[in-house]
Length: 141
Length: 229
Image (tube, rainbow over all chains, first blue to last red; front, side):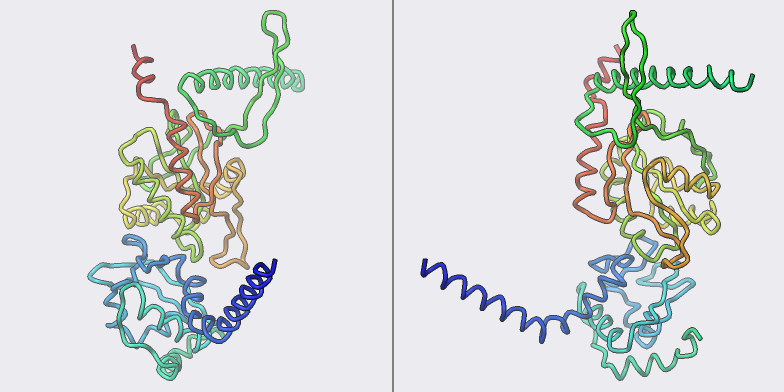
């Protein structure tokens, strides 16, 4: 009986600790992943592999390096027309997500830059804000 | 006069349907259809056999249809005759669930690539944008064979009404991303156009089950050979 109560207490304590650390740590750390799952994974897939010749991959994509300065604006305003990724042509339009703020876009970009086998330099929020400033005219009136 | 005609037509149609379904049932039994249910509304039809009243169950059946595929070929009910097929509703510019559905449909395509008894049929719900040329490009980019996987377009009303027959929701909605709302369902249809399963095409586990369910609808090779003799 006593052991049972003790066990219960311990597990309650552990659960409380877990929840607390999640508040301070996991949520922020994982915001990029959560937003990726919500806004990007439908097309680019959970593992960043894309879809055959229809949707370009993010995993190992040279585009992330060659077009680093355009990435924030692409997430916010989308993209149309032909693009070349790893030597292949893709021509499927990408919708923009204009409600995402600079912090959220930074988190998405950093998730993409450091996952799926990618090992590209991270973005600072200042860099993202600078990029977004360049394409501010695209914001819907 | 007109009413009279109709009065004889309806029972005749029902009788025909009853006969068909009875034939279908007996056929399916002999080819070893597993335990997949028949989905949709069913009707009980009374008929007389040797002076006794017999009740038949008429299962929901996909009506005849005619659409155009990515090769400008006409795809009708005859195209899927004697085939087990999986069907879905999508549009090429869909920013939400469609690419995931297509990546899962590719798994089915690959699992049955060498089995001509299985077909895939994807309907666009945005025929205004998704012309034959657009569908052609889409299929090419997915690198799939048109004989196996048909992407079809047609009259908007016919597409939306056939979606209802497959028990799939599809409609225009300006509020939705991309302008359409539709379910991500994969519908499994047997050789007699009866719906035998509805699966979530965005859920890999459900698609696993679909891939396992399909062989239950396929006649066993041995029996097929026996039928030939």
